[in-house]
Amino acid sequence: VYKRQDIDHPVAFCVENNGYQKSLIQWLKAVKVNAPVISYTTGLNKADLDLGLPSIALEFESGLWKIPMGDSEHESECTCPICVWLSEMEDYPLGKYNDTVMACLFAREAFRQSSGVETSSSGFDTWSFA
Image (cartoon, rainbow, N blue to C red):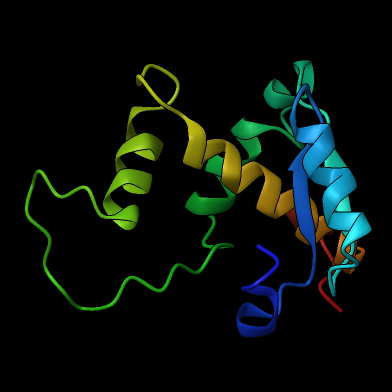
């Protein structure tokens, strides 16, 4: 994370603040990374229709996420990061793993908090990306 910040130029770091991850948050703040460090507590909020995982599905269906996939073909058993992510997204909530699904939630939360995007129960038409 620290070494890649000058390459990727993140707008924020979002870290789950449960258990061990609290030390990662402290370390990121101590080494003074070049972007805000946002802590995120997971719990019942994962199921929240406006801010939780169900809203991520609606965002994808509405075309609010743009994923640069490239033009290359992948074998059906491919385990590259893109294929792992696609598999976990398709299998959620019944899949064996959901790490990349949760990473989407953290990424969206970092974006929301660092950009001032607000959501409400009335839906996505209330978002302002200005």
